Length: 95
Image 1 (cartoon, rainbow, N blue to C red):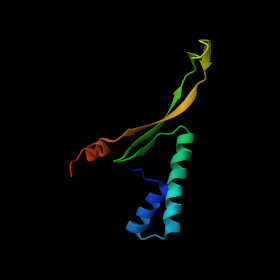
Image 2: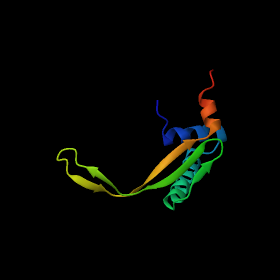
Image 3: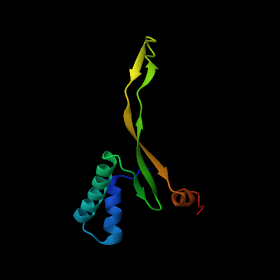
Image 4: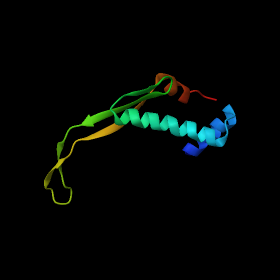
């Protein structure tokens, strides 16, 4: 089962008592702040949840699998997530 942004909005609506519009605005605002910070290359740490980090990959040599021709794979930025110990521990608790 997959949780969607709509599911998060619904949970906030149920637990906090905001209207669905307010809950949606809160979720959108949180995601926008996170996206903005990551785009600036900053690390986003959510205590008890984990860390989002943008890493830079350097250009490297590769091969075209069809022709065997050597190519240069351009550098890029990649997003990584590392779960906190608290989150990892909570995932392994037996009900």
